[in-house]
Amino acid sequence: MKSAAKILLVDDEPGMLRYIKTLLEVDDYKVETASTGEEAVERVQKGLQPDLVLLDVLMPGIDGLRTLEQLRQLQPGVKVVMLSCVSDTRKVVQAMKLGAQDYITKPFQKAELDAVIDLSLGQGKTAYGGEVEELSDDVFFIAASPEMRKIRSQAALVANVDIPVLLLGESGTGKEVLARLIHKLSPRAHRTFLKVNCAAVPADLLESELFGYEPGAFTGATHSKPGKFELCNKGTILLDEIGEMPPLLQAKLLHVLQDQQFSRLGSRSIVKVDVRILAATNINIPEALATKRLREDLYYRLNAFTLHLPPLRERKEEIPILLKHSMTRMSDQYARPPLPLSPALLQACQEHSWPGNLRELNNFLKRYLILGDESLAMAELLPKNDGTGGNRGDSTARSADAGGLKSVARSAKDEAEAQAITRALEQTNWNRKQAAALLQISYKALLYKIRQYGIAEAKSHHKLSAGA
Image (cartoon, rainbow, N blue to C red; front, side, top):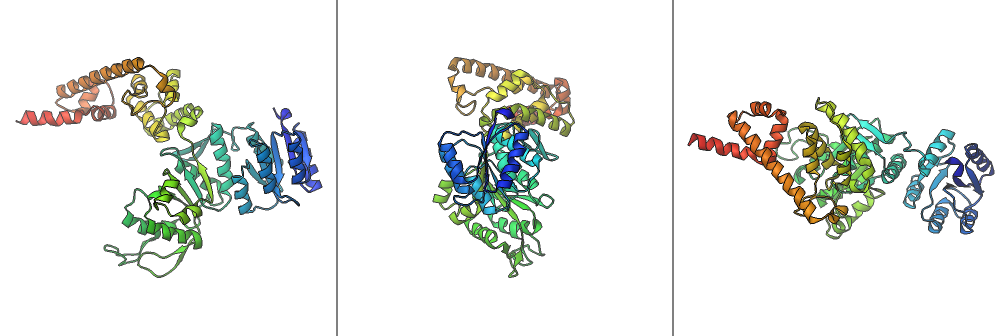
């Protein structure tokens, strides 16, 4: 409750100190004040344990950043919100790297202060008022776990600071979604957002894709074409899988980061752009730097601030929300009624380790929606006994016998299904639409099952033998 929260307010301006103290006491917070960083540090050394510190950046003596550092040394878990009358990019970044929860610029409205405090103390779900934040028709951001609420708060903070941001995390954790969130929360939100997958574009084409070309630059270049950086001028560009960019092209990108200018392929003219660069990767950074796969100077340019997305297995409280929200969206997308998510299915989903993270979960949900069979969906989540899948951690504690029995049951069910589908295909002379009607499943579900069980190959063998 608010009345139980103790706030240490640190500001060297007496008028501002009284004003903020009054705002806080209206909401029954217990407010302690300090006029200098030294006084705040001394109070904590003597045993004060605030739930939150509101700390001015610019103060005589030790400034806010140094005070923040000392406070977190004394109490590593202390939550700190920085206050400042100027928006200084360098200081904002330093504060975040030192562990500040948030940053608010004076003067501010009481509602702004309330929102920041509520979020910092965990009394509000998010600063935007909910767990699900819609970013576009098919993209949404969920912050239901403490880790993701912290990332959302950091994203909102760094969005207003026009610096590169490096997004790290396993494949499928939602790095592109986080990039879109940063863009939406930034002053560039009304401008273009573009994503370039550096791993999906052949190395010899990536340079022209990013920077454009002039006629005659290479075989087939018959006209001028702007690159992604020009198309994204004043906006935000996400360079996904940045670790896959060729080293020579990394050097050119470094030049763009430093000078905001480049030349198209085949041209000597300089093109100037104003583009916010976000980069994402799932590579091992120290290893990539050691092997020269990633240029060290480029890494330090991109790494003005880093956000690390945790894997889904570390934020399992979000799984039911992801499933329910995605089910509603997918049912609209595929024009099918939403399927129930029973307690048993939700429990199985939360016990699964999701090595493919959000991408695996979405694909699982699509299959469930198309096939409409909860037992099949449950079987898909069972731990495999070949060491290639299943849950990490708690799944290893289950007995080998139990895992074996489940595997046998699943194998028998799969075999029976495959045989039933094969018979239906043979009865309809391999007319898949008629076979789907005979089996009382959708055509899409049948196609999925044919691929799953390798029955497509059986079909080709059937044709050969029939024509022999």
